[in-house]
Amino acid sequence: MPIPDALRLVAITDDLRDRRAGLVARAKAAVRGGATMVQLRLEDIDPRDLVAIARALVEALPVPLVVNARADVALAAGAAGVHVGTDDIPAAALRRVVPPGFVIGASVGTEDEVSNAAGADYVGIGPVFGAVRGPEPTGAIGVAEFTRLARLTGLPAIGIGGIDELNARQLREAGASGVAVIRAIFAAPDPERAARALSSAIGS
Image (cartoon, rainbow, N blue to C red; front, side, top):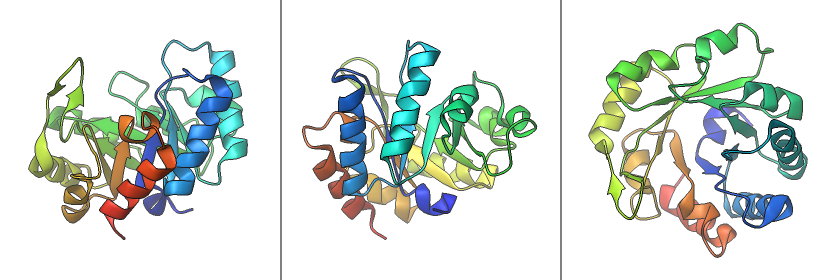
């Protein structure tokens, strides 16, 4: 799947409350509902266990898997690529050592962080509608700022942060290649149904 197409609906994992098998099952359900890429993001997981989980997802999913922050884990598991944040190894540095075709995504939230996109294949920009830290969404940059930052990077851009089926289409209409969501899919009682609703909201 070409990267621009894979960016349409990125489902980002949340936790292992239902163990590895449950996470894989939720990821498969998300893909059945229309997720076009899965990003493995798990905090405080032993690297050996993270590789095993990534391998299980690679084997189970018909769409690309990218691993959050850990290019070594992504390579060991045969994943499509990695997504790096502003505190991780820069995309440009990774590009010099990863094999051809290895996908690199980079996070951007401010103009000062645009340089973080150098060497990346795509950027995740946000939080567009707010990041949930505690009971209330905070720190929203808005659609207009998303559009401005996307233009500055010159790369395919996906929006992240507070995105649901009610606001996802705003980003597509603003020129986003797609959206990335965590809770709206992986925390939903029915991830397949949730992904289908988001996919429908985004449109073609």
